Image 1: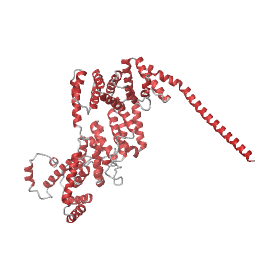
Image 2 (image 1 turned 135 degrees about the horizontal axis):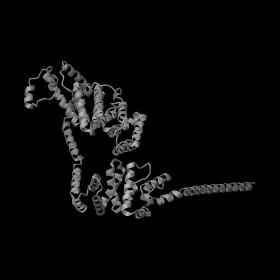
Image 3 (image 1 turned 90 degrees about the vertical axis):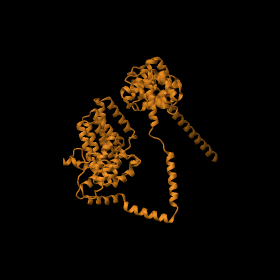
Image 4 (image 1 turned 180 degrees about the vertical axis):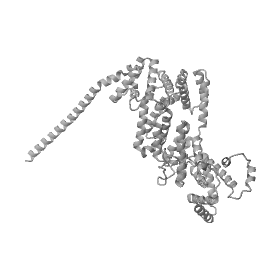
Length: 574
């Protein structure tokens, strides 16, 4: 009963009644006064953590240090973990807050890491995927900020990949994507070992297709050197490398005391001494005593010397505020989201494609025509099986509006480059939709230039996409007509990637691919080119040798003429 009573919270008390109750609390050594300051500290820390973002993080940190973080370090850990679990996209911001506080109070950073490790172990034992994802993402960004060492990151990956399941591999892929940029520099050998293990899991084929695509996407991310996942964003790089304190002695196998008692109110007999001690720490961190004194003295001197300076300062501030108001832009994309919702409801409520096209054209959304293309593709991909409705709708828009046709070409390029992110069913629907647009000539076949059919530039997903695309086109046009279209002399530069002749290895790969999907008839030109390739190489070599021999003969003749001229000149001189 006493333990329950010591916790914060309880029955709601109206503010006016609470003010009357607290009016007589002047004894700082009393339990009631300390409980009141504890509640205020808890509310303040929760409020500051809930409103922190990239823009205001310096101001929030100053306000945080103004609170007694030694007394409230348990509250700060708890608030950060709850906020990060609720908003994982802000993990980088919360990790930046931890990195700054950790430089001044290392015991706070150590306590947070211990709690996160314990939370991770519990979630792993209970197979709680949501908590696993949140805790690993937070730990990944703490590794990026050099609060946690790379050892704990590698231990987590070893544990997740030891006995791979769909969930454990998915969590490990997300973890590597978040902190891979930093891990590859800190421990390159172990990092390569992680990818070797992922490659082995991929070859075993025991996990779900969706997770296999995630692993392939991770390999593509590594190939791009984690371009979209930098370790620390420039605006969140707040601590110098020399000032950072890294807790490298923590291990996943250690037993930790997470000090849960710090999360609840405890009576402090030395309350006033501890408060004064933190005031000294606060002045050392924020430098309030010296800076405030200097600012006040400087301000008074400036006021004496420049009597009208304040008026000019006020005017400058007003102009700056007005300028800021003029520069404000709505970056929440509220209008675009509302437009997408309208387009979606229009598509879903239409009986046929003609009615749908008529309704969408009446909306007159000239500035956001690309949204129509994106929503048609998105709605098509969400269906269980391909519906011809979407192909006819996209065809109608391409025929009516040249601008929308260009947007669909851009969408084809984007969809092909990110096709590994789609599940098999979505991939099939999208490929069938574009096949309809190509065989109906609603979309220019020049868009096929973005496909490069070779072993290096294709993935399993992109090869499935090309297979379905070509098979659907062959089904509608017939193999003979499709082959005739692919042999069009004018279009050959645009089909150079789909039917490569730059390298015999790529040519053989394309021949084998089309033969394996039942479209070997499209590869007659490639087979002829491969058959004549040695002769062409020999002709090029012979022509190059002839040109070199001719250049040598011309140089020898010129040297002989020079020698004869020199002999004649010597005879004349004699």
